[in-house]
Image (cartoon, rainbow, N blue to C red; front, side):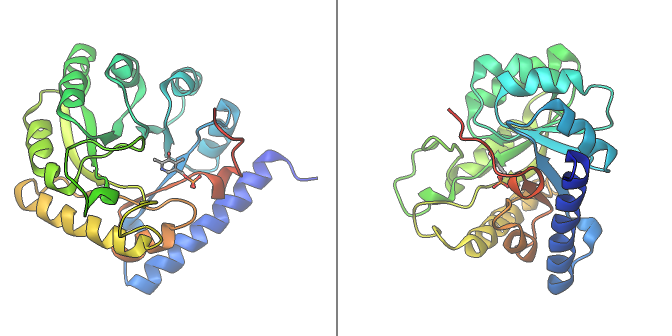
Length: 243
Ligand SMILES: *Cc1c(COP(=O)(O)O)cnc(C)c1O
């Protein structure tokens, strides 16, 4: 019987090997890709083990679960990323523990994040979540339950974040689409995100984070040029179904 620590160490080693291999194939430095471990649905004890095993970035997608977990782990040297759809009434709580919100997708959220960041006296990193499933459809801003702004909406949102007190525009994020022209083609989706990132960096050179890739497609994300991969299942195991 293996204990949880050994299991996590083995899984991390395997993910590390995938990232290194993908970097080598793409001619990239391993140091240019940051592993963010998505700890949603797993307990604070796992977060603690991960920190002991050298993980420095963790991500959560639901404030109800994340807030108590982050409080329990506040002694650990971790950066907390928020990656879920964020309602404005949860913003005050999220700003207390999040270092980066990767799922910024609408002006109203920018206003709320700015207000609470100023109030908390914190600087909050922001990634614009781009919805690539909408590329060919009608562009009407925010879409679907997975969130994200259409590619056409990125520039305006970027300017809003850059102008907002308490917020720092760090870059872009996407989830490989399940619908639209990129469904089943994560590599192409991530290459499209890289183009969007290049465009963004024309106006905002410091916004160079590109968060793409999960357990199933992190190799494609690294090949395309992602700077951050968000990995849950491959490190922690298959999650029980969320309600
Ligand atoms: C859950 C989640 C991940 C991690 O997914 P896995 O397939 O478990 O690696 C990454 N990004 C977001 C936005 C998520 O919600």
